[in-house]
Length: 109
Length: 111
Image (cartoon, rainbow over all chains, first blue to last red; front, side, top):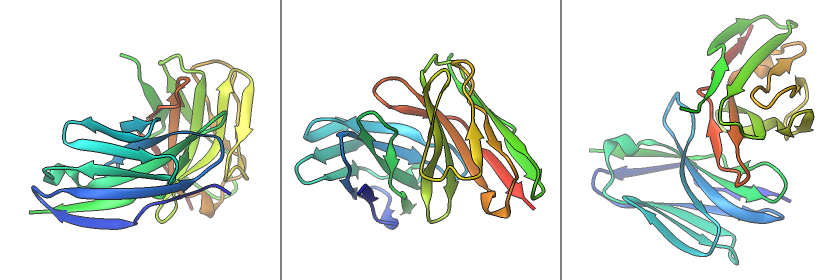
């Protein structure tokens, strides 16, 4: 079957580093997306990993291991504005994205 | 600038009424999607389309329908609204790589 798992909630403090994990089981896997969604707003694109390894984009990095069905999003130098939900989504060949339920990150001072 | 819009942004209706939510994109994307988002469930796919006159059912399609008569629009119709369809609805579009661009959402309340 198809399944995406990620933790429901995480907390962290300003300036810290946090890692949000995502495991997936899908057929025809083509890559893994990460989206950020602030409360009351639409999801916005953060990253897309197709190949194994780490992709860095400023304070955010995303990692993929296709053999393990595993990805993580790494957020460095956390800021209050990073408080949001983070959605991982598996890209399947020939069909729509499969989204996880999202991880709500709360950043405190 | 290209964009994706949804209307209305907020809607209150009564059970049994037909409701249509509009989605319009100017990205010229072939792929369009409708999701609902509820606490504890994340984004769930309702219907999607890969081009004009193409429509496909998603995970939670019962009670919903879509039609695709042109590239820009994918309206979502609730044939007979039910209280269980109270939710936030997001439309999205994508190009071939499947990176989806989301509209601002429609908050629907069915009383």
